[in-house]
Length: 353
Image 1: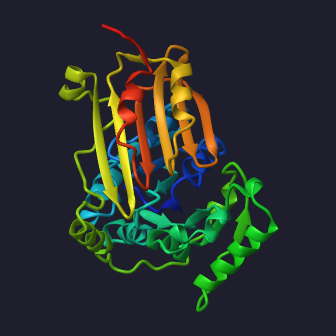
Image 2 (image 1 turned 180 degrees about the horizontal axis):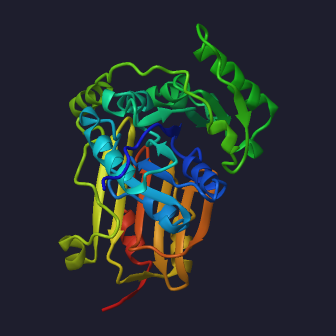
Image 3 (image 1 turned 45 degrees about the vertical axis):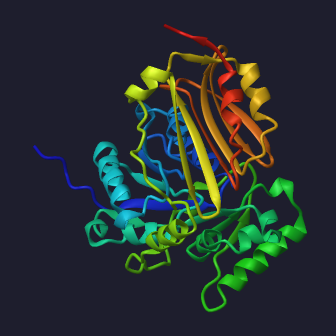
């Protein structure tokens, strides 16, 4: 007997710029989901390696009703949305979820992601609810953000604005965010603005149909790719996705592989290590702490257990995980230091045979 068709899955886009706390917010939402519901997360990363899947899977399991699918390697709406559609279809069939959360990369194009969800095929399958954008209000004084197309597009498509990291700024920054949002919505309804810290979002904010009617997919990704290529580097260049649980021959031969990406004014570099590499926890923390990055995420198998690391200009957090398939790290910065690799390799304490 064939399973019943998947119909009207409540779907939320959770977006925001690099380092604003999207993954932390989604982790908090998953911890507070109804125990009897199955939730699915489709996560997109700018980097080629893909770390978020390991962070989620290290804290949640399918037995807990949480299903994860990654799309690494740049904005998942590129190539007419094909990478996103393949991953989304596979996730929906596997999870048959009561709710779907989509986390686009901080350098992606959320309006184009929304347009893919509104395609004819998904009209009956998905029910697009509130699109939530997280913002660090301190960034509004920095033109690198306010003049960045993705940063503003994330605001323009928001049904709800969340001023995250509110414990790190005061009333003046909060008012600046209110004013900025009002300026972006001069001819339409201004979305509500809420302030929170540590990614705490009320699950009730997910409810309700999105106010946005997606337009046909514009080739924003292709335009960005053409422009960046003319400047000498690819934008959202896609290499083959690196799925968790798969071991490439290159890793078996050398013990690790390195992947890089560039676009929208940022560079990424990531490493993926064979599971036989065991890292020294103290060395890893000492190596990570002084790095100047826009965002860093990592999962390491160490001599003290498995840990994830999340680093932004505000600091670094360490979280114990239940398990992971292998160690991975992804760094995003305006310019990546070319000499990082030797220091990272020195953090390996044991190579199991």
